[in-house]
Length: 338
Length: 126
Image (tube, rainbow over all chains, first blue to last red; front, side, top):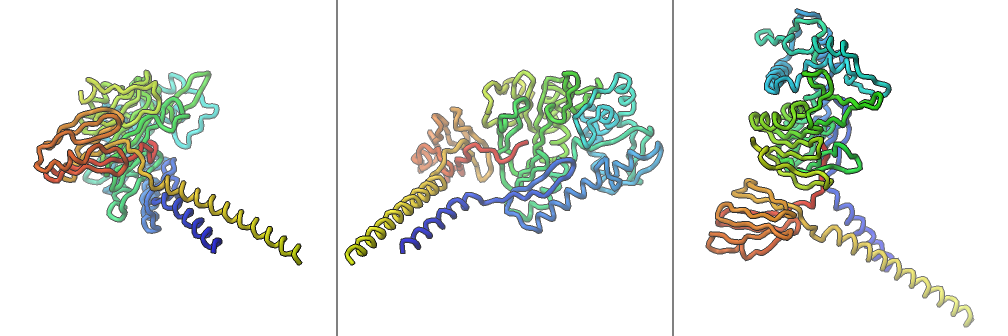
């Protein structure tokens, strides 16, 4: 009898711990150079749906796969017309107009420059050296959206310079997160989608932490609530870095100098219901610096937060919940909503 | 004969002691597990809803005052409460100070709900 009681108690103990876990993590993917996962009560049907969405985006927009429209454009000669599907065409138009709004701080045509610096995928920091001034200049000359023409009537794109190249790496994770959200939101109670750090909150809000840009012994630097239906993306100068002769070079290139940006903003988080906006503008903000970013964000109606070199956190329409590293302070004065 | 009987008795009582120890340990573990799963954790934020729509989010660690929809809310000392309300029944005022995850203050006449959420553990890193 006692043994039965002990067994029953042990069993109830097991359930007490098991009860803590009400969602599971579905990890399957490697897409767009990053791992993706979804946290929800998963079902194989939804899992397949997520895979399908992300893998098809990868196939369409990877610069390295011959199935991709970007691959075809980059291989094309000047004057060649490359046909686009309706969806591709609208993505191209959206990115081109967004680039104009950021005054080129976000620019999908910087790929020649990105390649000259060796930041194109797959990135390997080992033994990298920065390009020479003349190499930078040559790459800069090929880096402009003005070489590309979208033709709505024929739903196609052409370019006027052979070595002009496009790359959607700064935007595509946000696009993917939004597409996954649209694909599953009617079928799941709630879910958190994470495509390589770009996060979508499906059907409920989630508490999200932002990577500490300078000290990875912190799990995160600060946290905020990502509301239902929102997508957040973060870009920082701490990602994809190589060091040469004691100088470190990061992957966010400023087209004004042709070199890694040095605006004082070391990390930018953007929150929007539009995944393309979130992802692309995070890159733009690191290039633009605090003042221009604050203006741009209020113009475009997005929220976010910047982390500066001098350890300030600048929220833009965002409620910062907790800061883990007390040497950082929130600058929530005049800047906000300026 | 008597020797045998004594031996059997001592074996039996030793078994009983271990039985008891095992049960006590298991009980303690269960109590501990229940404590951690069932005890309400302190919340870190209060969400304020008006007519079902989230209007504000207050951090409990930062003292604040908020007036909306006829209610005056105060955050102080890690707790939140309705200081005053223009509603007739004042049930929201009488609810008192709340601070544990899951606790709520409801003002039906003004359609305001205050809800304590999360300890502040992030669910994802961007």
